[in-house]
Length: 305
Image (cartoon, rainbow, N blue to C red):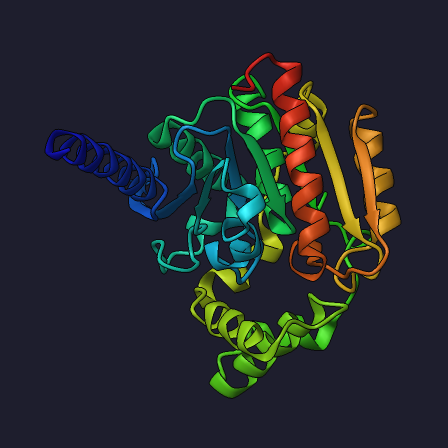
């Protein structure tokens, strides 16, 4: 009996240690990556470190916190989810020189540095809003051989007035040197991101997050270069262009038409009840569609575990 109890105890201990090990492996992982021009890029990883990789790229005045409905979703924990703060945002470096933000190639190099440092194997890229421009610049500079697919989420296809909904007072105030005017504009801009507003705690967190962004970066982004006409047509991997139909910041139909003109192979999807942020406004649906896209993209390349 004593030997039986000892064997049972050892077995239970092994199960507990395995569980703890698995939990530790799935815990948050934070590190910095140095961009080619020396800017520190803050990276976070969640989910299964051995799972298929997804790299999330946030939009203007955002950070990794934008993706919490994804990184905290039980349905997505089988994936290795990599988020990072773009230069000028969140915990990443915030150079004072406007030149650090004007050339879209620098953002592409940041993404390439994250992919290299993380050793992610053919990840799917998910770029929201400004993140769409960054993915296109990445494709122009590096091609699609290192990725399995890309999702443009309410993506800015080009910084073209015909594709951007005009909000002159908001954008002018964002560039103001007056603290109150600037912060009020940040609140207004964030409000425009949603057709269905998030709960107050989430909104206030995202507002604080947005207020952390570099003013130099915010002023410079309207003149940012992006190699869209060279990048998006290069994508031979699956590309999904997804928009909330109620988007108040991007012109949906003209943006889809321009994306199709640049790459006729793209797929499109519309969320009727979402604005500029469907991954927050209709998170459960978005997460299901994301998982389906990732699995199909990886299967197409024979890389799904």
